[in-house]
Image 1 (cartoon, helix red, strand yellow):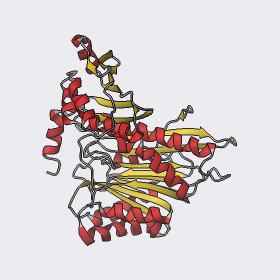
Image 2 (image 1 turned 45 degrees about the vertical axis):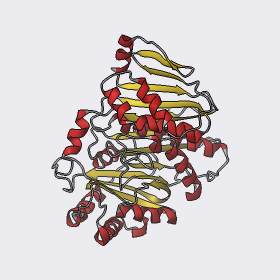
Image 3 (image 1 turned 60 degrees about the vertical axis):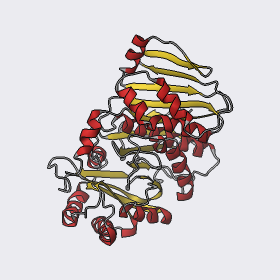
Amino acid sequence: MTKLKYISGGVTAAKGFMAAGIHAGIRKNSIKNDLALVYTAQPAKIGGVFTQNLYAAAPVNYCRQVVERGTASALVANSGNANAVTGDQGVEDTLSMAAAVAAELNIAADQVLVCSTGVIGVNLPMEVIKAGIKAIAPVLSPDGGNDAAQAIMTTDTVSKEVAVEITLSDGRVATIGGMAKGSGMIHPNMATLLCFITTDMPINSAVLQTAVKYAADRSFNMLTVDGDTSTNDSMLVMANGIIGGKMIEENTADFELFTEALTAISIDLTKMMAADGEGANHLLEIEVVNAFSREDAARAAKAVAASNLVKSAFFGEDANWGRIICAVGYAGITLPENKTDMTISSDGGSITVMQDGVGLVFDEILAKKILSAKDIKVYINLKCGAFSATAWGCDLSYEYVRINGDYRT
């Protein structure tokens, strides 16, 4: 993997992008930001992937149409209200948000992406939102990325931002930066999340979409917190091409570099979300190697990360590896012969709990030390092929139940 240069910033790190985040009054909390706006004066090519939930929110369906058209100049997002399962009113409100942003920025309404997150089944407070859009547009700034990142948070405890620079084959330096939210109702295809990534790379929408899909399949679609897929999941990437020069084409070294960088920051944001899972004490990384196919590796890794029994064992810091191998066994993979090895590791050390398909006696005291760490890795070698995949998740705690017991009220 090419070494990426990580830099400070997030969604406004790429040249030409501005952002802002304010408290408009959508959320009951009178302090937290709840409205975000991202803008580029030079229209951007866009790519996106969205939830597979059949009750997709009105803004999701709207954004699918914008992505199909291929360009956008602005993105507005609110927290506190998902605008999902809200019927014709939800569709009208989404269009109204786009129109309000367009009026403030003097652009066409179909150049505005709209996203929402929060409680399902409640109509948006449109007068509050329209007033918020009037207030937020004048404060757009290249320094407004963090305010925007805070505005899209719901049960997140920390904002999630990342940015990198890459040097193209002709010496041009391109920047990719992004922000995301996600803490609960997270499960692949996609996870409950909003992710907005920007780049100053010149790339057309079809080529960008290929890179976005590749990155999502190896990051957000390998993330699970609680097995629930939201109505509002959206990953949107905007490329304004402001560094100029030759367009990036598929099957070139620069395309591979861009895709690698996009995947890397998507994985970074994925891990931030897993670590910030509702009530989580541990970030879990499940790596499956030498599987019969990449699909098998992904199925096995996600099955382990999604297992409530596995998650509960990690919460209790109990090295109950039998629950892990059980999840691999029901994942629906090809396994011609059981020669599986398994290792569990963290900053506290490493133990091999299974070798050549058989469980081993291990040091329980060392195991407890390993499992008391914040970040824990499970390495599973199926030894039946040449494909690998990694999934991310977290433990399941009492706090998760408390948070979701009164989420709406």
